[in-house]
Amino acid sequence: MTLKDERLRIIVNRVRENGRATVLELSQHFDVSDITIRRDLKELAEKGLVRREHGGAVYPVDMPEEPPVIQRMFQNRANKERIARAAAALIKDDETVFLGSGSTVTYVARHLTARQNLTVITNAVNIAHELASAEGITVVVLGGMLRASELSMVGHITEQALQEVRMDKVIIGVKALSTRSGITNDYLPEVMTDRKILEMGSELIVVTDYTKIGKVSSAYVAPANRITTLVTDRQAEPQILDELRAMGIHVIIA
View 1: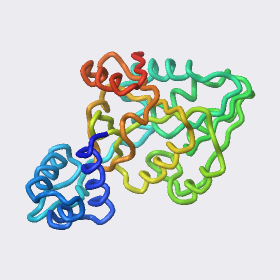
View 2: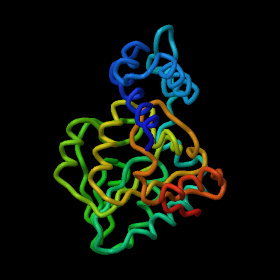
View 3: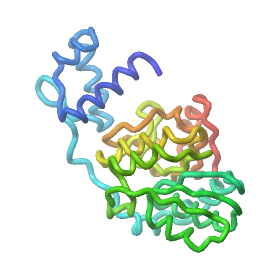
View 4: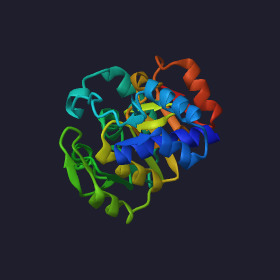
């Protein structure tokens, strides 16, 4: 990550946490010119990460939300099924894995039911239900505040529970992924939970269809190079996939 990328990341975090930031305070914080900060804010505004206002920037609170996870299960289903099958093939018997929330990850869970001596840790109640009758799988469900649209647990209780577990692999879906802005989300209360999840396993497998690749949402979660393996479909933009490969990410086209 370049110095500029790190500066942009800090600016987004600062605006997100405080609701706004001024050109003056940012230029003093980074010891750079007002012109440099205005150029940074222009770039971030074009990506939808902040909204420009006179003298600074504010957080873009009017970002549209995704449909509920149950509804998304039927959107782009064929691609999600292929992605899920390819991702599930990366999971072996005797492993401990984390499955995050989301429609594509739910399909991954359905392809794991025949595994033996597999431990699945999840914060998604629908995924726990999918695996409840699988005889070879031990399911560990994390508590917390229920995010009804995603059927997932988030918040400080979830984050505390995550400190008690470790896993070989983490499988998550994403709201948006780009080479420069990394993994981003649109639901602020979930961001810290997402970050804690990423700390718990060394191998991160992201499953997402082409509609999320090259997109940027409102809240920064992690840099793209945190990803170990990306599983996506044939409609994903080839140039972006090549850029991700150049970062050392293993890209699987399902």
